[in-house]
Image 1: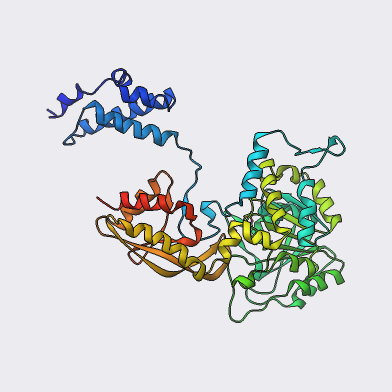
Image 2: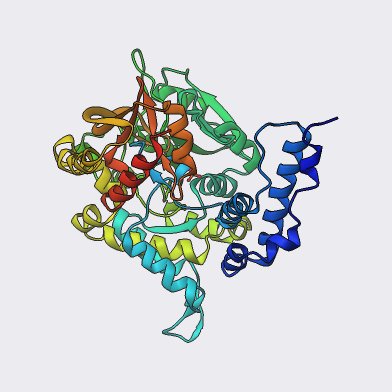
Length: 465
Ligand SMILES: *Cc1c(COP(=O)(O)O)cnc(C)c1O
C-alpha cells in the first residue's frame, strides 16, 4: 500500500482554504476566478505529489495558501510587460526594439485616454486624414516631396512594390536579395506584390552595365535594398544609389530604395559607419524610399515611405494601404518623435536610442561605477567588477560593428550562473543579462540608471542558495 495514502485524506478542502484569513485578504487583490483556480491547481499538484509517493510532503494549510497566493500573482501578471535590458543591445528585436522618448510616451497616454483628431480636421470642422498629422513633418525633416506611413517597413516595401511594380519587372542586384528575418525575403515580397524579380550581377559584384542590360520595355522600376543585417567584404562592388538613379532616370524608370533602418542623423559622428542616412538618399535622387520607425530612428514600429508626390498619391489609393494602416497610438508616438528631429540637438537629447548610440566608454564609466558601488555595499553570494566589453546596435542594423561599452561582470559564489539567469527572468521586473566566460554581464549602456537600486536588491536576494 502506498505509504502516502493516509495523506490523501488529509488534503485540505478548497472551501476551508477560501475561508482562511490570508486567502480572504488575497481575494481583495485578485479576481474570484483566479483565487479558486490557483487553490485548485495547488491542491491538485499536492495530490499528484502524494500519488507519486514523494517524501516530506506537507498538507499544512499555511504553506499551501502561500503557494496558491504566489500562483495568483503569477496568473495576474501581464504577459506583455517591461523588462530590464542588460544585454547592451540597443535595438533588441525580442525586447521590443526602440525604447520611446518621454515625449512619445506622453503622446500615447494622452491620445489613448481621450477622443482625438485622428481623422478630423479641426480647422475645417470636417473629416480629415490620419496621414496629415505626420506627412509634413517627415517631408520637412527628410527633404522629400511627400510622405506617408504604414505599420512597419515590411508593409511599406510591400505597398511600394504592389503600387509601382505590379505586372512589371523590377531589377534587383543579387547582392541585395536580403532576408530580414521572420520570413521577410525580398524575392517572396516581390512575388506577393505581383512584380517580377529580375536578378542582376552576382552575390559580390554588380556593375552599372548589369542594370542597363536588363532594362526592357517590361521594366517597371529599379530597386535597391540596403543590406542592413549582413556585410559582404573583400572582392565586392555595388552600384551606388546615385548611379542607379542616373541609369533609371535615363530610361524613364523610377528608382526605389528599401533603406531598412532609416537613420535621420549622421551616425559617422558616433562611430557607426556604412549606414546610409535618409536625407542623403533623398538628395541622391531616389524616387521612393522606405524605412522603419523603430530601428535607428528610435520611434514606434512604423513604416515610413517618402518620395515623389505622384507615386505617394498612387500608394494612398492602393487598397493595401487600408490593410496596412497605422493606428492612433503609434501615430501619436511617431509625431512626438518626429517633432524632436526638427532640432537634431533636441533629438540627441531626448530620444533614448540616439542617447545610447552616442554613449561612449568614457561617459558610461561613471554610470557603471554607481552600479558597482551599490553592488559592493553588501554583496551576498557574488563578486563584481567593472570591465570593458563590446555591445551591438541590434535590430538587424550595422551587424559588423561592435560598440565599446562598460559592463559590470558578476561571478556567483553559491549558485550557478544558469540558476541566477533563470531567477532574474522570474523577478517581478525581469532582468535579461548575458553570460560570457563564467560571468554574468550587465551592460550599463542599455540600463536605465533609475533601475540600479532594484537590480541591486534583486541580485543580493537571488545569488544565495
Ligand atoms: C528591417 C528591415 C525591413 C523590415 O522592416 P520592419 O520595420 O521590421 O518591418 C525591411 N527591409 C530592410 C532592408 C530592413 O533592414
